[in-house]
Length: 122
Image 1 (tube, rainbow, N blue to C red):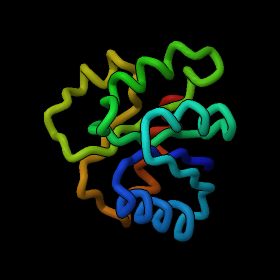
Image 2 (image 1 turned 45 degrees about the horizontal axis):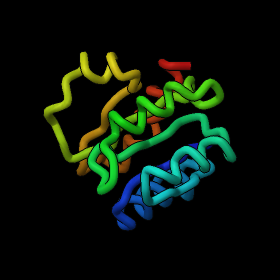
Image 3 (image 1 turned 90 degrees about the vertical axis):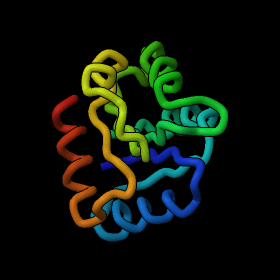
Image 4 (image 1 turned 60 degrees about the vertical axis):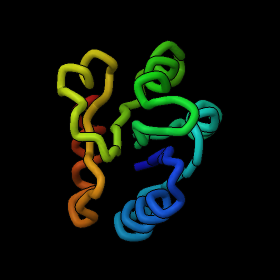
């Protein structure tokens, strides 16, 4: 699976790259800010985008909204990876997000959870 990770925290990006890339064998593309998500998604056409909800320049809902309006990128499943636990399931459905994983995450189940989210929205 090809996974695009967008998180402003370099430690989180590193952990995800190790867990998904080195352990699970996924192809991982990393970006550190919201503006780079669009270019990376367009260039690499990932199977899944893992997106931090709280970013310095824009929040995850705004990024998802913009991605969903793009004809080529709109169908890519997106999962929020966030420290926030107050995002309702209905909100995720309304904005078109496949799921939410809270930080801190369980590295032993992360790959399987992401694959299930990607498969459910495929």
